[in-house]
Length: 549
Image (cartoon, rainbow, N blue to C red; front, side, top):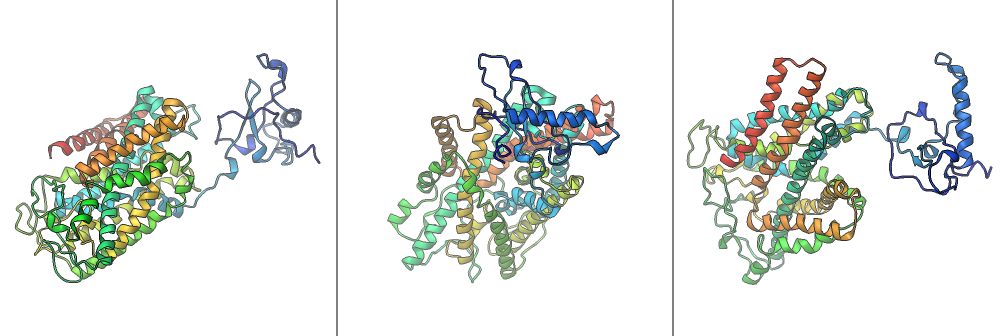
């Protein structure tokens, strides 16, 4: 009995290479005799138990014919998943991870996992994006961008299947890019993926500064019994404000500083509790140490808060819309004092935001690997995009339609629609506090992903040393602080980062890979070439539109 409990390995530890694609019916440990090992080390690195197991399995293999299922190795001969190793020609052993023990999720879990992953901070900017494009055109663009990004995501999901004679079961999209374009493809996909992650971290920093500022202001006013007075806003229980009344209706750029009339608390409090001057630096003390953790597993436990936050936002939007009612007046091409045209030339700003809002292309293969029924991947992906699109439409349309015009102009809708509600609003205070806590736990996860992707490629280790990690975190945090200090417009930050990363990972690379695979098989036809070339041009136009519209 004691002999049966011994491990199959000798004293040498396994290497750092793993495989997840082992078929349990074809598991056959391979043993190389010590005399075939090249080197001065004469110690046997594969135990005698492993050699016996190898001989036993190979014996059954010699007896078994391809058409005779009676002599296949019985279950007690095949080792358990935790005891399976793959032996290299150098005599070292690598432990197998995965197999049948890998958890698989039903379709409903996969759909909501994609929905939860895709739903981010962009939902706060959708009403502002509709304002920039016009109400009617904004709805059309949301539908079209959802369909286009869904198709491109489908192409990413299917990209591995077009590679012949290669086992791509454990490949990710950067591996596919490397196969077709070499090192340039792998590094370009990595760089643009980092742009999306760092852009999200910058948006998080700006929003956390915003939420912390308003949360602290609410608590200070409540404790000191201060009545907040906003110079521009509506009256009644569902108060709506216009923080920046002097907006350029054609430029779409908000004033970056709060006016003096907005802060009615106290000179000392206003001096040390400023959204742009002090709060972004206070966050450094809290978040910079969290980014230096070697593992982010602790913060991964709080990912469920994202679903709760989105659910509460939907409830808040519904409640406010019922209280405010709808305020719509259709002006197709001409603006008025309180209303905007239905079609505006600033629509690329919405398409840029939506490129990031519908962006999941860099991790869709990973998410779909856990789907229990792989034949339903396309259906589940389509349903997930449908849920995301309906959520964006619901929030964007209700906030835009319920915004009280008159007395306020629709042009007062902020890039973060929560800024259109005063800090004294209790329901909005709950939303800001919940989002602040959720983002505080998600921010280290994003930093961990940046570290794994960048340092893993540069040094072969996602934690090569404290100094390397600390310098990287300083650069990422410094970028967030600078943007929160000088340009805290999450709508513009989202549209720029979305258009940049979307150019490569949404439009260009999936389309090129599909056309190249069709051409190699001799199946490329001119309608497909024209359509996918149009997608590439659309991505380029989307990027340039952010700078010229």
